[in-house]
Length: 259
Length: 208
Image (cartoon, rainbow over all chains, first blue to last red; front, side, top):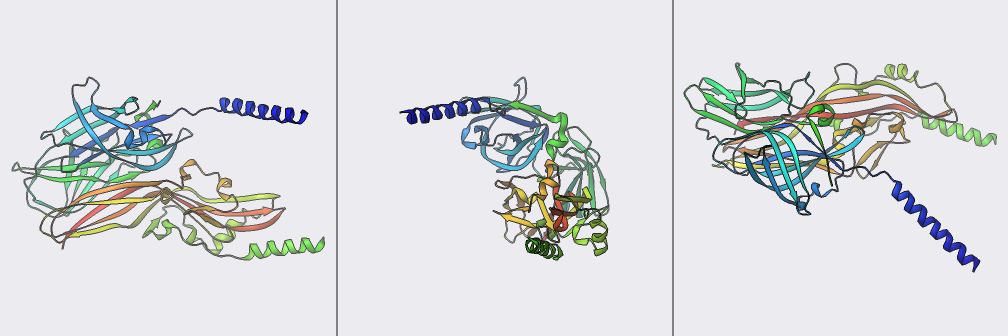
């Protein structure tokens, strides 16, 4: 009898200790980080907007495409609004930020052909999940252009871009278009709505210089306006991948608490 | 007792006298790596080793003696051609290249001498806890289970070939280390850790 009582007491004691320890384990709050970025797209078939977000818990429902009910891109006063379909989520690199590990995930959203240019300068993404949770994330700027190319005067042969070494953030500074022939005089070059860039035409390359601004940029289209009024476009191209985005983004990061 | 001590000393001597290079990692297969100030482990000469080993040859009771030759040195590299694709048809083709690779691809390690590298499920790490003794920043830490995936979509015009190249920037830490066990040196050699910080893509297009 004593033996049974001893074992019973031991089991109760161990169970109580386990409950106390479990209750006292510090639970890490689930967080998501967004980073202000310039999203510029030139419409073409099957075009996807790719939004990177950073999570400290990759098992949270927001990291899984099947959890999403609706995604809305809008501005704070909701005067502009566009609903997008999520096609998939891909997972990128991991980065430590303020002693916490964050996983990069990228939402792939199907961009519709609006038939006209569409600009949101204070881009907000509203997300509704099937479990009833909803979130709003500040993303930066969205420029969606719908332009038809009617010239191929520039026979380009290579594209590459570099960031500003002294600016640290993941933002393009120069784009180099190497070419074999350019049959028309270039009037101006854009990389987004109202985003004209300085350019310098050299013997076999055109160097675009993008103005320094405190917002990320790694993937842009190029729209070349010629002096005769014709337009040539070069589709979106991702010029670089950074693996230290959070470390270098500082005030561009907005943290959000997740349920 | 004397025999046991002699056997231990003999084993330690045999272990420390071998000097073999460990197999190359991904970053060593890059077309070129430029270190503006400093050099890669593979370029350390015997004289370099002789100089650097002086910093780690002071015997200690237990653990690693470490000497860093380059610490977080900025490097640039030219990697491989990511893909080459041509369209010999009469209409433009939408081509999507899906890049999927282990997280550890951004991190490469190598070693010389008797410093070992263990490979477990594709994960490479230094043996005998050298990683933690190096006190590397979190930039040098990656998860080894997950994959990262990117997609690159291009429209390839008829009669055109497109080639995509990768080049970029990274950080390099290397040096020499020696491990002691009861004041006996059991391992000594060079170590190197390379981490990619930025990848640039260059797209080339030519008529075929």
